[in-house]
Image (cartoon, rainbow, N blue to C red; front, side, top):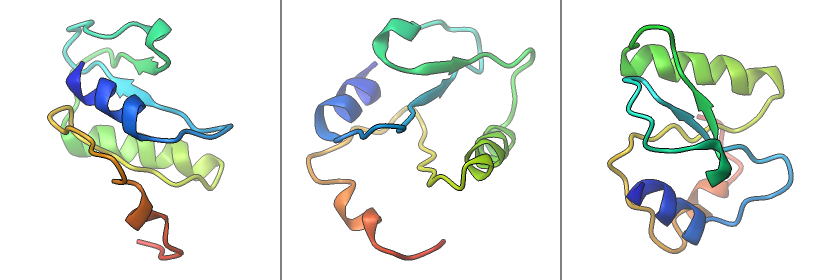
Length: 88
């Protein structure tokens, strides 16, 4: 919840931006009314498996992907340096 609260407080989301939470262990700490899409795998997946699934999803629309763990607290201005025209 701290990660999501800080994300929404500090991040200017635009039309078409998506916030996807992977509920890997069925903890259910977030509901969809919080402005997120929730993915609940049928069995727990590794960090890499979850990342690869989101990379495939982003590739469908040529979207950028910021894949983060749930122990991050976002600070004001965090997104600015990442908006450079550099492919990684």
